[in-house]
Image (cartoon, rainbow, N blue to C red; front, side, top):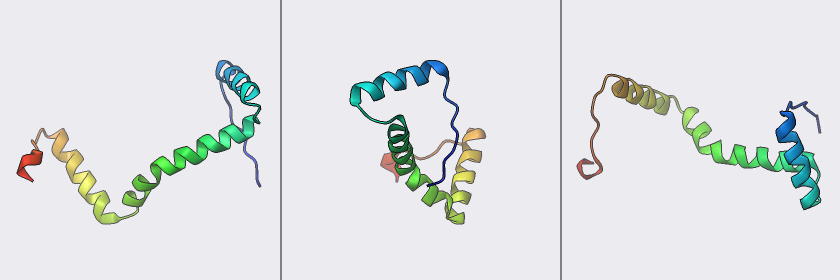
Length: 77
């Protein structure tokens, strides 16, 4: 597996080392688990953004919000 260098602020690195020691886990494994969780949380967003029609809907919505156009309430849908 290819590797990557990740710069972690010293204070956070030290806390991570303590946690890794307590859990008796490798820091690399902890980071891999965190990255996996992050990717999983964002899969739906990536899926939506891969569909041009949704990107256009989102763009229109952002423009409406910036213009102060009020949307419909849940009871109106």
